[in-house]
Amino acid sequence: MNRLKNLSEKEIETIKKAFIKNCHARFMKYFFCHMPFGRKKAYAEEIREASLERIAHLTKVCGFLTQTKVYLLWQDLSSIAH
Image (cartoon, rainbow, N blue to C red; front, side):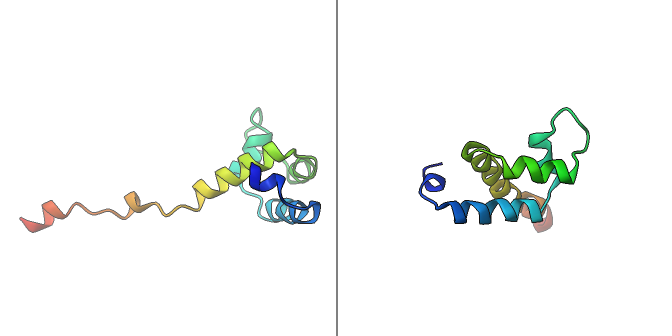
């Protein structure tokens, strides 16, 4: 949150444009939790009007979604050795 506060308006606009361009169902769910699917136009408007707190939350979600999910690739080596 502190890092977002230190950004200029232009930099925050760039972040908002990136979220609008890369519309993900998980991001839309944050704004439209009462709907099974959000609407892209409404999502774009919500992003444009979003507070820094909301942008910070979306950034956190984005970080989680881009993490490498090692557990999906993990293989139990003990079963192979025998």
